[in-house]
Length: 399
Image 1 (cartoon, rainbow, N blue to C red):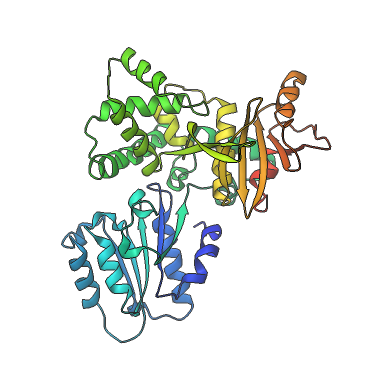
Image 2: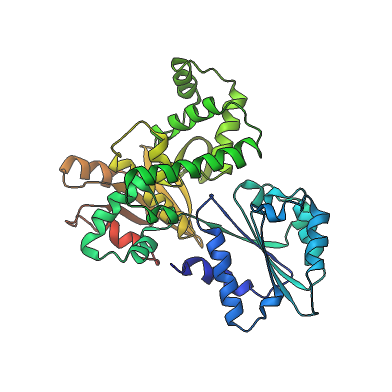
């Protein structure tokens, strides 16, 4: 089993903290339950009695009797057998009505260190009620990074490129690596997507017209890395004999983000120093889900490379924007601890015209770290812009 140290190292400092709820959230099947089990293993290894560990998976019918906050509170209280601290792990808790009230009631007793997981935006800052406001720390779990996949598959450096192309097509959801046949991978990824549709889109968000929803998702995925245009989507749907209202379209777009199918990326005006709420872009959270929801049998490697760089940046805890300059656009502005990095992503830099275009994108930017990330092995770095091979970027946690 792959130990997801990049996440455990962030959570460990809160293992024994009763005052803060530990929220672990992210896309379905991205590995949240596995991380909960790894936390439990570490706590047991620290000497905590198993009797003081409570684990509930709300996707199991065993706990179907827990409907609301009061049921949750009463059941957990009923499991206490001693006066020691309890470590409570609640998996996919968003199914429970007003769960925040139950969690907060347990928290204020100071007898519990509580960990919860969820697969939609109800687990994020935007939707948690005031009952938990300021009383939690949250950790987003993403599909496996390239570096984690290298470790999981024991891939040698000479085979990195082959692995990268495999990820371009099939993504990084952990369980997809159990399958070797393409048809099995497709079946698995389809089942993940269907569970998102049923449990998060239909049940949670109340979206009923799944055919139109799928058409919009397909369009956004097919036009990934381009500026989003409402008019273009509406025109596309008309050609496909689907007409929807503007409000419905934006509800769909919000559903993409809130269930972590897609990541919405805002523009940052480099000269005006402000975030723009228009002309944003979307990137797939997992390239495997993208593969099964688009019409393209062969992946666009340039787009896939840009996507995997974006996903790796957010996995490294950067805030990521699209850069707007007077002349055009920078693929990404990545910020962390008030440090800004300006990044272009280019699949192949071997052509001189391509190099001129990519390097000139930085002309209006001064006194900042500037990078071009590429598959090209020959180094074209200059005094202003550093070229980085994609594998050096993906395998380097300290970028």
